[in-house]
Image 1 (cartoon, rainbow, N blue to C red):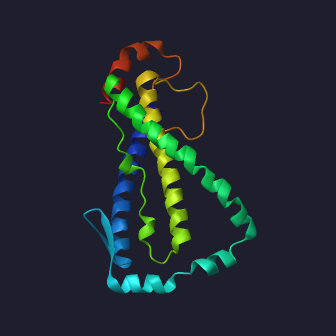
Image 2 (image 1 turned 120 degrees about the vertical axis):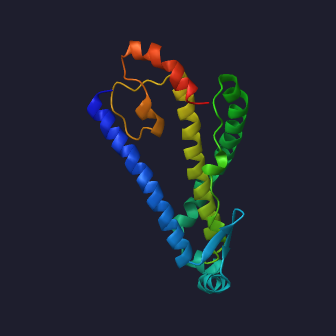
Image 3 (image 1 turned 180 degrees about the vertical axis):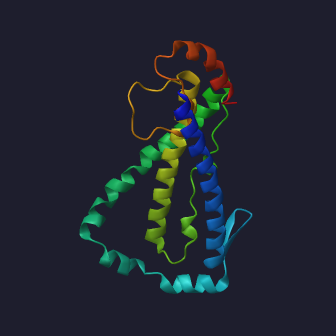
Length: 196
């Protein structure tokens, strides 16, 4: 990798760390503003906030009455993905349990990717909470899949593609340049060791 690209990537990494620090401060401010805290992994709202949330919640009948007919008709198609998502989730558990120990790859912590915390928002009715958890599960699962796949790729083929592509995963930056056989032979062992 050329020096200028390496320098830019270093600056990006530093900016990402700075962004993470700022996001944490922002979350702390939002917790105070919206009067909730996390105790032993559970979300707890202040009593007054809970009462306000319940007061603001729209009933399910009113929610369904106001929903566009097209939304109601496509809902079964949207939720039909739950079956392959759950199967994928189970298969990923098996994949990591069987394959990652063989290659010495650290397992991905599923709980860092799949967050189902929106169901604690009492201003959402049951359907809205189900929708939010479904989206949180689906998007978290896809992020989880991506991390597992990126670790697998780093172990077996940490080589950049010949052409640029949209949305490379975070590990891709450290992959070896396409066509650099010497680097592949020299650095593959270290890239694999980084996965432990």
